[in-house]
Amino acid sequence: MSSNSPITQVSESPITQVAQYSAAPDSPNGQTAFPSKLLLDLRGTRFEIDREVLVSLPESILIVMFPNGLILGRGHSDPYDDDDDNNSEESISLDDQIIFVDFDPACMDYVLDFYHEAQMAGEAQRLANPNAHLHNNQHNLAAQNPLLNKQAIIVLREELDYFAVIPPKTGFLAKDDASATGPVHADPSKVNVKTQCGTHLLEQRKIFTALQRNINKENNVAEQHLIDMLCVSGFSRDDEWGYRDIEPKKTSIVSIALVMLKTTGSGNQMATAQKLLLFWRKPARKCWWDGVEVELDQDEHKLPIRLWARRTWTLELVLV
Image (tube, rainbow, N blue to C red):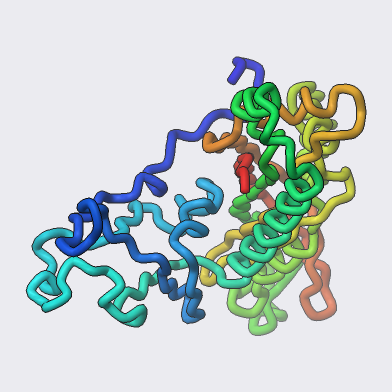
């Protein structure tokens, strides 16, 4: 990435580096036995997912799901090795292979549904040009530019950590201290400031509003170029997050938006799309602070709050 880029590269994730299996003795040519399906438990919701689909998910999502990595398979010391059909991952029931993951199942539903939609679009494109692969020059071009024969998805993810600052002289009193004199700090359990702040931010669903506010404040040309590039490539300036929710027991909001990359249109459409190939298997990150003034309703009072948000964007491209 160039020095003036608004986003920086994230170190490569180990998630898709699948651990080696020991070859099953009865497998042909000593090939390794892999489980074809995995059973994930996402906060109490079960997902049966193809192994190939799981490892094809965006790196920026996989590293959140499996921060310590995911090893697919058993080692030689596994007690199952003494079974009659040892070394066969398929011999173990799916229930015995449950992988517990601290990840929102609603977010997984959104991602998997979009993947299916993108795969259908890619297949339709290939059917529209069934003989394209027969031409040697077309094959060579596709090898150099994978956007010619695969559907690309732009993945934009935001992690938002928020903090509420109550000015010391708000004139707001807790109910139990309504008759007290002098400055009084409201009871957090009654005011429920964090919950209301989270709800306020949750309702701000426009993707680019906060970044545009930061651009207007700092006149950051590189960040403006980032928005322009994303909007040319598939987003629109008024787009909303496809998934957005508060993390349980945290003052944190996670948002994700997926769009299919545009490769046709204006004269330089493919050139712009190829710039985003820099983020294929190489997620990049941008972080900034955003502060706004809000007023929360507390009984018959208005409680002024300085609401700070630390926003971290991760941008990535995936091919399906």
